[in-house]
Image 1: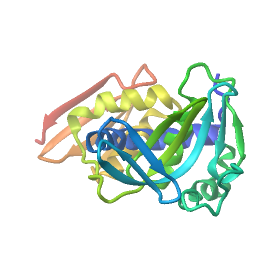
Image 2: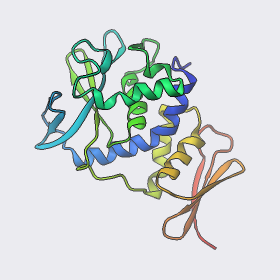
Image 3: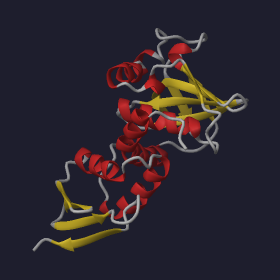
Length: 227
């Protein structure tokens, strides 16, 4: 049973596929290599590539807690790396998402080691941008939001939709149809709900139907030519 609020779970469901797609684009742009970060200068460099970042928060592995950057005494809300991410707290206040407004989250209830990633995904979804980076340090990870126009925008790939939605729903299972329809809407792909599924009019003159019958995830993603 999830210890997250229903508001957080639904927001995560709405944003997760979009953020995971951005993560793939970011990974292709940013080499995995020795890295360095300058939070005062808002930069993260890996493999000779530098991107602009902001600080979301940090996850302490032993304590299993998440601390927002604005609540961290070493940084605070006016720090150059934190100020660009304050929109997450504002969204939490506006939408009633307590995970975005509580200074430190107790995630000890979570079974697994990616609780920090879940918070980062939801926060990155609110901010838009180009995804996030988990920068490990002794005892935990700092989570940095990437907001850099040098990172290419994420394009829509119909063939990758089934695997992308499956990955997103595995993390945020609250509303799989919402996960798909928000992805389609973001890329301006027309769609309509049809019974237990969603029908999308794909670029290039094809139709795809996602079937959600009998399972919390969709059981099929069938593409056909327009008639």
